Length: 355
View 1: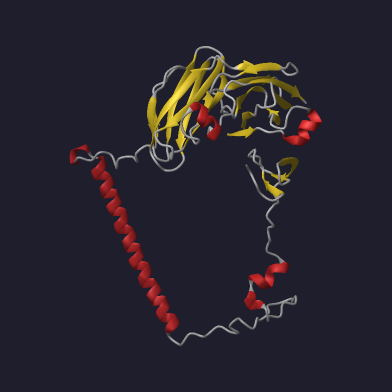
View 2: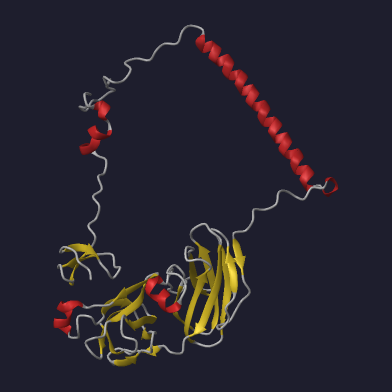
């Protein structure tokens, strides 16, 4: 059980805001993180920035002003020094010009030797090793393996023959390694929305590590460029995944859906919209003992929400442990993952309302 004094704390839903804890539970009161005060240099900070001017006369003047901390006059060079410097400068100029000529001749000779087959030259130094590897194209149902170079990328092409819901991802060879995945329709400029990390909750359901990419995505028939990029400077062995997901449950706005979840699993909900829209997802358990949990895609990360709290329960209904989510949906298909934190075979009613 969480025990701490009432006050403002980082939002447990992972949003960029703080939420008020009343000592017993989270309330509906939120506010953005307080911005850090930035002190910009200016008249108010002049003396702090330049302390040596504290005793100087800083009044405006029409001409140059001598500051007490400056040397009042240049020191005159002894007689004969200037001429000596001129002769010394000419000498060093001649030496430098000679060095440049020697370097140019050496580079030219080396280029001729490297480019001449008769002398064994190979046309120059070997190119730097590539930081990009590639795999042969694959289809859903396959599970190809490959290696992502340290700080580099692994590329391949996913060939989809049929429109549908697909679970796409990659599993790294170690829990401490980290790669991100982009999925871009071949020939298109923009990648599809996809998380860089599947998060802890989905790693419990899908396996792998929290930092492995993986989520559901709607793919019309066609080709998709998949790029996996390593983010920690370590070589990563990965296994790719692209499986059809026939158990996805479509939920239409304004039409409640009854969702039953099998033992030790979760339900994947599909919500479609033709245009960007704000939406409310209201999940209610069939009895008060259920404690639902929703995971959803927010930008390039997986976020989660579980309890609506007592205030919303009194306002909109349901129990304080039922999930309640307000979010902005982009045009197209969005996916939410519903599970119960404790019961093995729960049932829920799910309603989606567009604002």
